Length: 463
Image (cartoon, rainbow, N blue to C red):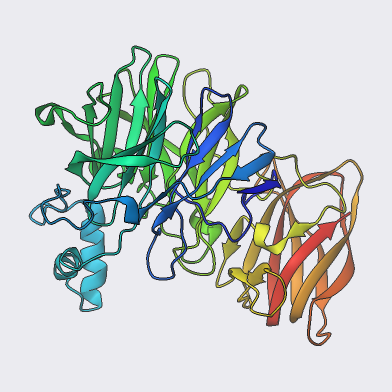
């Protein structure tokens, strides 16, 4: 068990990569977050789950491992239900785009998919969801062999035991219990499915499944189902393909948990979190009267190493949700004068730079690295009641950095506030202070790298 305090993004200690976050306030009043766990270099997810909890959105606990893939007795059973997969005679727009891209590289995507399907897989646990019913906590999960199941615990953090297989196959289960006590189960990729669960929370009438509840063509659905109810409206949140790849969380709404659903828009897009950013998966939840979106951002220049991040959102009077930007401040207040902003807290990168791990023998350190000329790094937001006059930068290497301030209320209002000439001071981490000027207020900071010779950013602070 790990306890820590934080209100910034990313939320968890850097060595914990928990993406695919399903956040639920459970009967004890605490918020619990259920997600997969990235600890491999070659694929998403791993063979274990951790549960994260908080009662104040500031003090957090990462509980001990709640489930492992080794506990699932049916894994790699050839008779396990399989997801219906891709209809190659009628591929979705996303699959068509992948086919066109890979054809240019001489790759037959259909042949590749079929080859991967026939390979023996490790017992990876993909994105889960959890719900409470009658004092029991039901954790729904999916695995790398397409099987889906449920495990049970007397505690929201687990450990979870007594695995039972569901009579369906696929990925990304979501569970929802309506006010009348009826449980609904959702799953799928490219097109989703829904069914009412029986009171045992496992079985269902396979003839009563609603297929194509939301689809890529009509709702930009990719994967990552999540269901919430606000007033009399059902919100289906999922990884959204509207902008060409599933880096967004989008949502559709209905007056019935089994649809039909109408597409409404995007809540957040993580496209600029890393040059390799590929997917998103998360949820929305209300804590103490405030709604939040829970999502992930990848790191290290790869699609993996995804991290939990949180932003407050607004549910408007008409039921719509405004799109929000990724921030460094997260659920806390804007960074104050002289407060440290770590390089790994950059909420946007452009070019080749990314958040990576320090390869020295020092303590576990992450930084903004792989910086090339023309790259940019974005930090949101800082705020001061006095004029801004200086910036401190802890760094390695050397270079030249132009500092831009963007008015948080007017994204088109860019102001160059100074330029920092970063000298090469030898090995180790160095610090430089430079004058800037901007009127008092709240801003987004953009570091524009005009020169770089092994330049790396560990932290900045402004006053």
